[in-house]
Length: 186
Ligand code: XMP
Image (cartoon, rainbow, N blue to C red; front, side):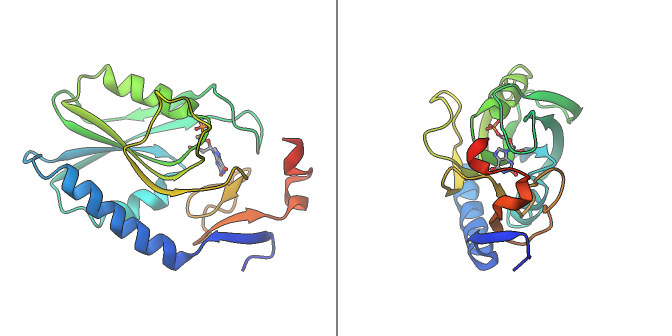
């Protein structure tokens, strides 16, 4: 275990198994999509989840991405998501699947879902690896969820603290001293 990690919440094996199972759920939902699907990843946090998930999906597939900065400090998430780079293929009349790392307050998905809906897809669904239950408003929902997690700041498997720890192969909580302040102060 990395020296900055207080505890592992989701192990590498559990991630591998659940991502494969989630891909099975997604495959079933799109079995009528003969023209293929368009995956839109929210970067950078979704990068590891995307690469593992998409290799389980047998569809003809296009991939685009949007970068979003969604939190004002290193730990505090905010409702105010700001879009950055948008690199998307044509979405009109396509079956579109958003792939994100975590549904927390819902600020990020609210903005991204709205921007993509405006492009006229045939359908729009969302897959998230993690969800903190009860935090996002009901209208900002994910169709496919890997794991519900407790409301602590998590890192690893693409998720960062201040730009680091994305390469940890598991989902973990950092030691409180790594935050420079208690996470309870956030
Ligand atoms: P919202 O609050 O907009 O959050 O649903 C979504 C984005 O904020 C980041 N985020 C986190 N990143 N650990 C992280 O490393 C967390 O616990 C966490 N909560 C939110 C993340 O980029 C996500 O896409």
